[in-house]
Length: 368
Image (cartoon, helix red, strand yellow):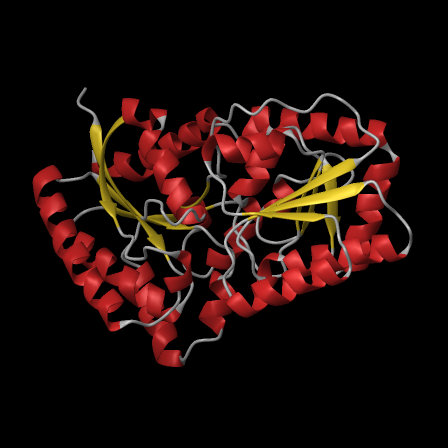
């Protein structure tokens, strides 16, 4: 039987952010053995610092993308179009054009949300905007979300059997750190901005230092979103002589080397997340994880099992959990092993591809 054709919309790196990483992994995955994959790169941002900024040339850059989509649909005649949707008004308006184009050519449409703030954004928009959003969503056969906790955001828009859960998953060859050390090497990997919790982690280190606890070091790798925030954070680290080493954004082997040299992964976002790739990477590296209850994080990080869940904006709680892991090396190792098991069981590429394959099949088959 001939393979079905899928048109996958999504950005490719750079910049290295959740949506672009996900698109890259999906296109390289074993999903290719099940479907013919076509792709439209929707990325119009060269640098993370340009994201979210209104620029006339950025708006114009989307027009060739729409024209390219028309050409791809005419050439490939996809059985299904997978379209990620934004959870901002400007972003959703941009994405809705892709949906209209797909419907114009009578293609079946499956949406995907890579965050967890859709309902809050929807409720905060105007009456006319909400009406527009509802009409656009009605054009799709269903939507993919990253976790069970995110499904309720779409109960008002889709039947429950049309809301599909597909967590992130990928194959990472990261050798776990087996030795137990008296020192605790912490790692933070993400964009460097307050919403990602980096300030709370710095405050936690300051709390521990002021209480006389040493034996800690923190590696921080990521891209600064604000020059002022970068300068103020580095000034704080210097003034208090905090044990922090800053790295530029790391990818590939450099990132895996950092993970394999670490003892604990700390990522404590203050605002909604989807299912962060850095959590998957930390689990693959066999690290205990300190994080917050945002998006689908608690479906990967189980409090007391493979890490700890703390309240957002709670440096004291972060400090307490870091201290516990410093003083209990055996439990730290056991939590890391639990992370590795959860990764192998649920968050490999094979797991993600199988969930995607089942989802695509359910949406395409009615048209067969």
